[in-house]
Length: 342
Image 1 (cartoon, rainbow, N blue to C red):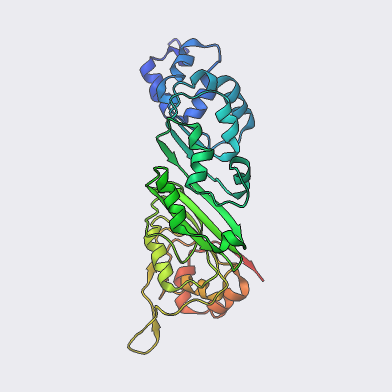
Image 2: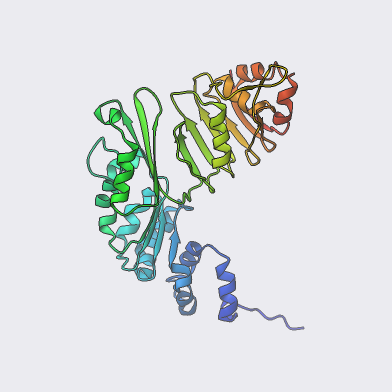
């Protein structure tokens, strides 16, 4: 029997498309555009691979260089949506003119980036800033997905923060499907987050006691912090609002509130049991024993998938009664990684 060698280009276009569609389009374009192979070049530059470009999964500088120099200027008319992290914002947007760009998503837009892209100092990023520093340069943009956080130290701005005022600035620029969170992390530091809805990011940081009544269907990582204590009811809301939560980081050094306790028939304190069916990682190193108790005590919480725990060793011994307490045995049963500090 004669062995025949079949080259990729020998395959029908229909088969090639099936193969290429299973790959990341960023990799497809990088591998096939401008490689002196006409058929593959034309195939890769089709709208299927060029309408939406997501650069959030790469930190390869050589890949970004080639895109900015050789690829984006060739496919610029096809691009309708960019998904970027701020570190690439300037390079990508200056690489070409994008006349059909209508959707823009920014990930991980944090404080250290703000001063570079927004005018003024000591400002809260609100709707006015978004309009004047981003949207004004993209007149055809009809969808802007964002999650932006800024921090304020003590001063006039700190004492006059208004969630309602900030939210109104978003409404004023036509961003109606948005939400604003203002959280006082300490007596001298506040955090303000604005984001589009539905919330499509997989993480949320610095959520406090005062939070919007929203279900965050995509969030798997959550950091909660407040200068006031978290009560049991707060964690009930967390379970309802973050149904896919996998990683929870708690920062709180205030004793837990007990206003939501009820008395059972034997006059002992009882709670509604909170279920976290997907929680795999819990970090309470910077919290009091109350919050470790909240999650390890099976009469308060069910964490059947918990495999990683970061905690004060002293607090862990206290809550588990030197690793002999029956009520903490079930929630600790699957822990495989323990990070404990003395």
